[in-house]
Image (tube, rainbow, N blue to C red; front, side, top):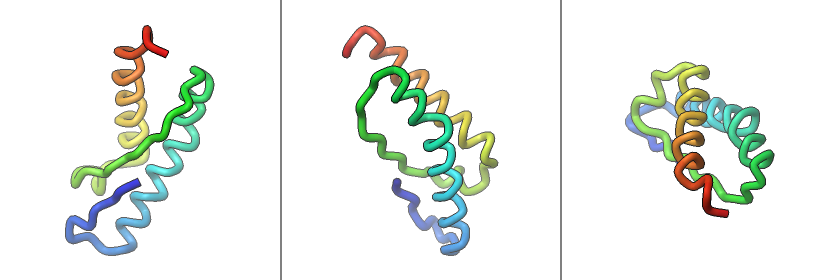
Length: 76
């Protein structure tokens, strides 16, 4: 996971990392596992992520997952 500074304090960066890590652990990785996808996931936070709520981060990650794997649903 990559969380650039964007002139933010360490406390802000750590909070964002914890939120992203939890959203991945609870929602994204189980769906990948259930689909039989054995992949590495790298997340790079954008500047707007600092102002997003947990629900917004979760939705963005789930939307990415839907877009990414719906296109590749026919490939192994």
